[in-house]
Image (cartoon, rainbow, N blue to C red):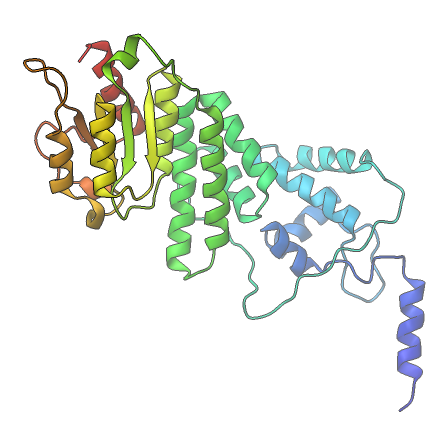
Length: 341
């Protein structure tokens, strides 16, 4: 076989700057960042955010330095910075990065196959600006940006607003996209859920261990048997800790007998039972918990059972309040201690 073609390819490869031939294509980089190729071309045309080296007559390749600029651009626009300003800041950040001037190792291009897809925008609707930034960061699988935006939302707006108006709409949008796309976006949902949980635990403050509110017993927080969704319960735990109220969090899928044993041991002022689905909302178990009693004869008391979650819609007994939001649940439980139940 004639070796002319191979020799020419080798010569062209040697003539190219180190790392360019192995850089990412526009399509591969778009998939990696969770934006469309059109967006990358638009940023290049409008703001000069493009590959520094463009081989003649060939597809553009994005070197590691170019990718670093675009990653900074994505983080800034996700945080609400106007694109033109974000482009200037991204270039300045990359220009001052350690190691500038050295030829970096080439980034491998992701394999393209039947499972590859660009992560499109999520169906958010009319929501806060922070939701859109958080959703874009989650779709890019940009964990540092997700973590930073969640922490900023809590710092800026407080837990209740951050949960109800930033975290929940974004989680719902990811869930809807997952449900409509088969197994696609499952990685986005898992990453976002993990960081929401981490943020809620980070902002939770341990309550005082004696006197005052704790004399009435803690609030027990538990998911119903078979129920795996814990994030809403974690947000309530965080909110109660901010109020200085004692809690005992038992998390997902608490077996019925374990729940009853915990109630008997702790003598809680209230028991919150979370059910995401109707199939896990067991009214007989809720009634059994409500019937628990402790204390000396003549002064025996039991817990207030607070069913929470969409699974309880239309299923709870009179006397069991059904809060429809985090704020409602916090107000209901705080009142128990204020009134000295």
